[in-house]
Image (cartoon, rainbow, N blue to C red; front, side, top):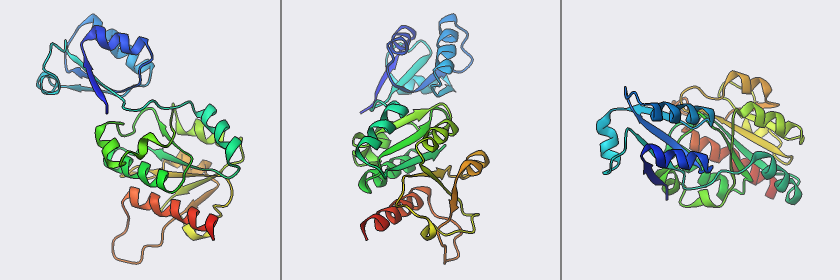
Length: 243
């Protein structure tokens, strides 16, 4: 499970040692040279930050937090290039899942669970804008989060460029597409991009995709939860590979 650390010196040591930090909470309005230094280091390392009232920090920990509390990630994310290389050594037709700023931690956990259960090879997320990898994510994933590589990248566009160098097909889930999910060939190396709950896949990533596909919606509701949609995309890939 993820741990909580607090205090300027403790968090500075964690940053210096390369510890995987999920998010740092700073006391709103606090002016302190040590805090300013931590904020700069956090931004340099692309660690998500939040500025909150003093009372929230008091609720998070019982000790002298000095205006800063950090959540340590329960998992260590992996190097994208190394993971992709190792995957292709074992599997010529892998499936990757790219999450474009999925912000709800329960959706993230559910997607991880579906990805691992369906045999996906890795999950790739941006360093900023994604749901925190915390106890709730672990719980929602039913522990699957420990069984599939999760990679962080500065920008998903970088990951797409890198995957394309391996001739990976980029499939973006988009309800605006005229093509159905069932028209996509998942028997080749594929990366599936799922967009954020509110905005969907970004325009930049849609332009970079090789294929855009949607799920047929036959009822009156105009969209599916992103974790459900991702599971359906993944299991269409499973169906094609096993028939």
